[in-house]
Length: 253
Image (cartoon, rainbow, N blue to C red):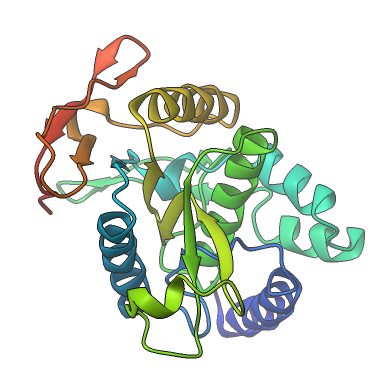
């Protein structure tokens, strides 16, 4: 992309981010987003573990591994999602102009192939790639869980120390929230309180990724069960399209 195209893409990115920050991105989306970085996600994941221990609640977490995440983004799904999420038609049309008609060439041992048409995938290295993928992933999760209430219900208050258990029992100024997915760029961790909820959550996820033509690698996906204190640990048995996921005590990167 030439300099003029990069400047144009940066302008579109600024406007797209302003639109998405109006509440279209889920609260759990971090990475390549203003004021939401890797530190925020690490803190949220750790706090979820601690709060489940405080509440004597089970925590089931499944790490979803996407295969060639940026290369499998469907253009049709992306443009349709922009319309459904209220992006102006003119803006969507300008975004399409950056992708329609794109071609690529493959280099092997000094030989260059003929131009190949690109029908899906966001252009890696571009300024829009991560935001477009995060948007597409949010659209898919919204479609998967629009009627689902899975997740961990957390009670908290922010007018005292976060882990002050005595103050949390006071009903005044106590807020609650439900945490289901933790998203960082193209990584996703799903969280539930029971094994049955996790299996149902994965069934919905599997149906959605098939619909949006996003690929996952079940061989690299793992599920972790954190029991309450002084409770015997049992391995989680979660299946995705007939493939049982590996049950682990800790996640490995």
